[in-house]
Image (cartoon, rainbow, N blue to C red; front, top):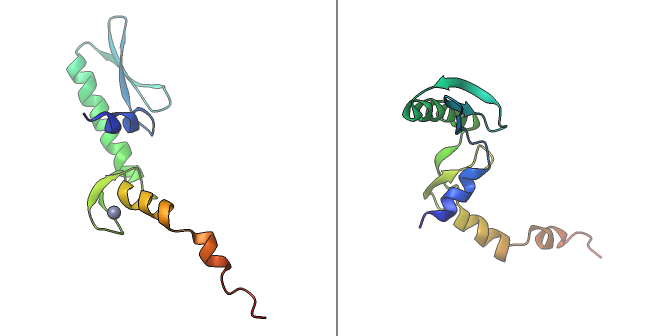
Length: 107
Ligand SMILES: [Zn+2]
């Protein structure tokens, strides 16, 4: 299933549509109403998608090639440039602290 993808989208800066009395509102990632008065769910969705796209552009989220293996992946932002596979491999087999301490003081 696409469960993993869904979990990510629950957090990190996602806009949402909420059903309120008499229609729909669009909430920003902090839960604030940023657009309201929608009678039609589809219209509220469209608005949310537009806001989301704008926010993603600002945050530089979206598809990006991995700096390590060059495979395209879903980046969480400008800081996120390595695909999950490479990140996992690095945290697993590579110890930056162990390397940094080597050869510090001669004699
Ligand atoms: Zn990679």
